[in-house]
Each structure stands twice: as C-alpha cells, then as structure tokens.
Image (cartoon, rainbow, N blue to C red; front, top):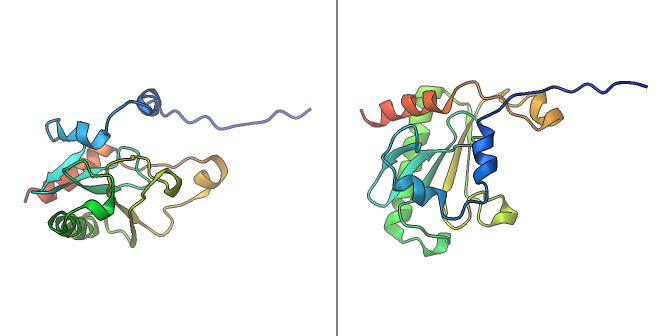
Length: 164
C-alpha cells in the first residue's frame, strides 16, 4: 500500500474570509465607512469613485475601482461616474507600471455570480497586473497561489505614490 503525500501550506489569514464569507451587507460600502488605511485597503477616494486593493488578490497589486454609490448594474452608472472610474483605472495602470513593472494587465468587470463576481451588488473594475512567469505549478496542481508581498507592503507602496 502506498502512502499519499501532500503539501501543507499554512494560510491563517484565510480564516477571516471563511468566517465572514456569508456576512450580510456590501463589503465595499463597509470599507468606505472606515478610515482609509491598510485596514480597509482604500487607496484613494475621488468625487464619484474610489480605488482599493483586493483583499484576496490574483497577483500583487490587484486593485479594484468602484463607484462610491452602491450600484449593482453597470448600465445604471451615470456618465460622470463612469468617466472617473476609467480615469482612475488609467491612473492606476500608470502607477502599477511605474512601481511594479508588470508586463501586462487583465482589466475587467465580472457582473453576476455565474460570470465570476465575488462581490455581488456593487459593480467594480478589476485591474490585475501580470508578469511572465507569474503562474507556476502551484495553481495547476494544488489550486494555490503564492504572493511574494504582503497587502500592507503593496498598500504602502501604492498609497505613497498616489499621495505625491
């Protein structure tokens, strides 16, 4: 009889997500009621939209841009808010290029659970910096990603640039 071997990766920070995954209310609206800082991951507030780090990023520097108002449907966002969201997205791509030197980006909006939206009810744009080789055997073999920087480090780096 052969013994199956497996890798054990400790990720205690995931427990917070597991305990609160079904918590009622909009995570964005909750974060917007908090003071900005590494605790709420809000990097910037505009007049109509804001930028925040993704708490469960695909890669380092994965950010989201969303309207300040709780709006579920993209087609219901007014033109001024859409324009600011795109302006902030453009700004963040410039900042990420300068500070993190990605070789590309995934930029997108997931609308609805079947489309991959993890936060339903508050539309948002994902900006995911990508590097050649940022994928490896871990996601393929064990559905695990390895993040080389903490969220606090990324937050501090990006916030410093945005407040210049």
